[in-house]
Amino acid sequence: MSRKLTSAESAGIRGALTPSGGDTWSTNALAGAGAGEAGAGEAGAAAEVGTGWAAEVRRLAAERDAVILAHNYQAPEIQDVADHVGDSLALARLAATSDAGTIVLAGVFFMAETAKILSPGRTVLIPDRNAGCSLADSITVAQLRDWKAGHPDAVVVAYVNTSAEVKAESDICCTSANAVEVVAAIPAERPVLFLPDQFLGAHVRRATGRANLHVWLGECHVHAGISPDDLRRKATDVMTSELFIHPECGCATSALWQAGTGDLPRARVLSTGGMLAAAREVSGGTVVVATETGMLHQLRRANPAVRWEPANDRAVCRYMKMTTPAALLRCLRDGVDEVRVDPAVAARARRAVEAMIAVGTPSAVAE
Image: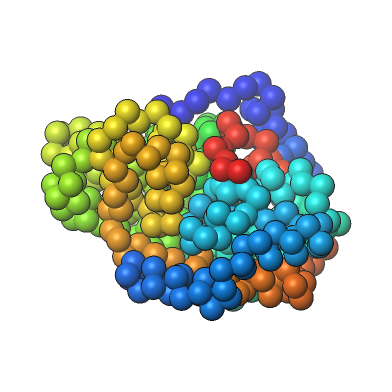
C-alpha cells in the first residue's frame, strides 16, 4: 500500500502538470562479472594504490572542497571512504543541498548528470565517465519523442535512470523509492507513459491499480538476471525468514504471488533506501536480498545481527564497480572526469528532477 501524499506533495506534482501553452507541459513545481571475480578485482584495485589511499582521498577532498557521494551499489571500500552513501533519490537530494564547491559522484553517469542538473554552479566529477547504465541506454530521446507523439495527452514519468535529454522531455522524474507516490498523485483520467524500466512499471501498476499506465520495455541487465528460480533456491538453501526485493527485478511479481500462497517466505518490494530503513527493524534470522550485491555492505553494517544473503551472488554491476580507489584518487587529484550538461537541456530537465525530489519520505542514508 502506498503512503498518502501530503497536500504539498500532491500540489507539487499537480503543479508540475500545468500546461504552459500549446501541447507542451511544464514541470514547474516539481552485465556483470561474477561475485568472486568482482571481489578479487576490488581487493586488487585497493592493493594497487597502497594502504594509505583512503586517507589521501580525504586529504584531496578537503583540498578541493569536495563532497563524495556514493551509491549503495559501489564497492565496500568506496562506500566507506565517501561522505554519504545512499540510493538515487537520497544522492539527488544531497547534491541539491550541498554547499561544497565540488561534487564527486561515485556511481554511474546518469547520477552525475542529475547532480549537475541540480547544482549547475558547482563542479561535478565522476571517477570514470565510462560508467554507463544499460537501463538508461534502453531509451533514447528520439524514441521518447515518437512515443509521446502517439499519446499526446499523456503525462511522462521518467525513472531517474535516464539521460539528461530524456529527463528534459519528461514531465516528472521518479526513483524506485517514490515512483508509486508520483504516479498515484497524477489525475486518474490522465494516461501515463512510464519509462524505461518495465519491472518497476509493473510494480507501480500493481500498487496503484492504474489501467492507463503505459510502460516502456526497458530493463537493468543486472536486476533482470535475478530470476524466480534464484529466489526459490536461495530461500530453500539458507532457510530465510524474509525476502527484500528491488522493484527493478523481474522476479518481483512472481515472488509476491508465491509469498501469498506460502511457497516463499514474506516478500517485500523495496528501493535500496527502503531496504536500509527496513534492515534496522529486522530482529534476526536470515534475509535474502534481490538486488545488486553492493547493497549487502550497507545492510550488514546497519544490522550485523542478521545474516544477509544475495539472491544471486553474480548480480554485480560492472559499471558501478568502475569506481576503484585508483580512479577516485585520479578524480580528486586531477579534477577529472568533469560532467557537463547543455544549459538548455539542464533547465528543462531540472523542473522534472526538482519535482521528483520534493515527493516522498527522505531515503535512508549512511554517513
